Image 1 (cartoon, rainbow, N blue to C red):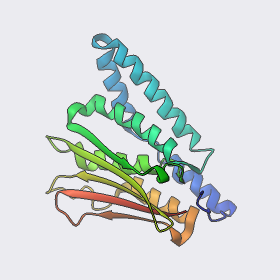
Image 2: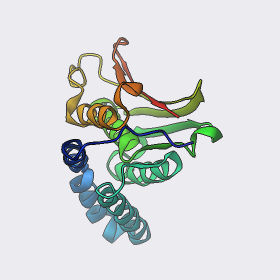
Image 3: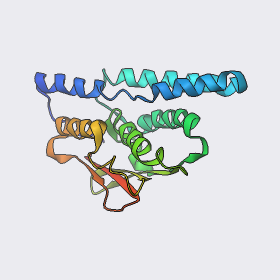
Image 4: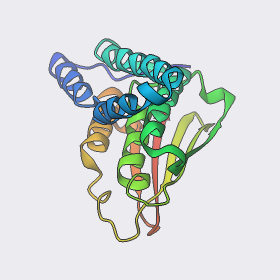
Amino acid sequence: AAPRAVFAQPLQAAELRLLKSQLNPNFLFNALNGLRALIADEPARARDAVTQLARTLRYTLASGEEDLVSLERELEMVDDYLELESLRLADRLRVEREIDSAARSVRVPIMLLQTLVENAIKHGIAPLKEGGTLRITARVVEKNLILQVVNPRPEDSASMTNEGVGLRNASERLRLLFGARASLHLDLSQASQATAEVRLPL
């Protein structure tokens, strides 16, 4: 079932469009650098990466037209994003997924999960010399969709404590779309781990 979005007044709708426009990932430059390195040595992989980048950019542009998409569709975009990040991080980036079948059809704010994943890599996994495992889970509990992104992070780093523009925007988008019925919480209570959790009403 689709979440029942709160009706947005014109000002709120304009604000929502602005917030979404700020979510364009800066990973584009990293992806292009990774592509440049692949072109001579691994042309087949470079062609695949160009396709993934094109799909990612098309999806990002679609965020200006749509507010909600199925989690299944969002996961497809995240998969492309992760493949592009792997050009830079290689085996330093490992991914685990646990997605309940009931969660896949739930409609979520477009670019929401991507924002959580990008934040986890930028502030958690990328700064670690050994990298780490990104864990994505989604389940339906008591008429709510619960999304979690868990990642390791440097123990001496305060880079995630202020959440960053992406997570603040995501929280604001949830407020505009669902009011108080949705939430985003970043748990930094463990020194070497961060957990971002989103709750959405069905």
